[in-house]
Length: 179
Image 1 (tube, one colour):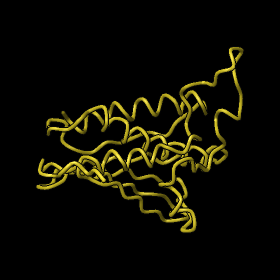
Image 2: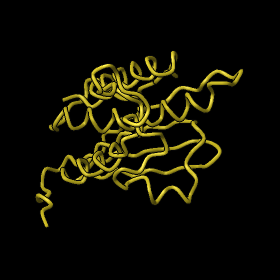
Image 3: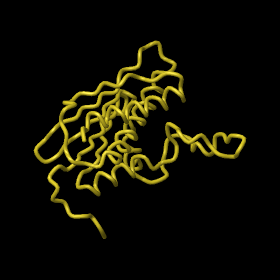
Image 4: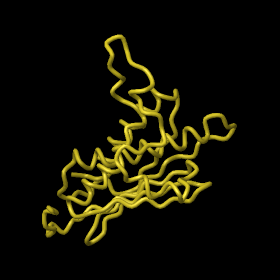
């Protein structure tokens, strides 16, 4: 599969949710060779990139929503290394305070209100596609990455933005990480 094409698809999906939720969405620029392919599970990669981009879109959108400034684009860079394929998602959404960084990979932790608490439709069910609030996007994404021999790291600069590095192992020699 092409990680650039999966990133493009995941970004389009996340951007459409942002457009629905906020009425507008920052642009997303993707850098990398679209002809580069490697063996990986496309649906897992889609979920991981989707969650990272969704977080970036929300941060940038909320930071620039009431501003006269134009929201800066989210940047996705796909790098083809010998051992890893790395996907970097960068935003200028204001970053995460250092005190909050230890919590971001905790299940059910979210800085957004839980969508189930907000509003239910006539049938008593919530809108399925939401920007944030359940608190499992980052933990599940890191779990998927690690299960296949990679990792997910988030580096933040409070007051500026966040860089997320999704490392995908391409060696094919990792053991299944069971307890």
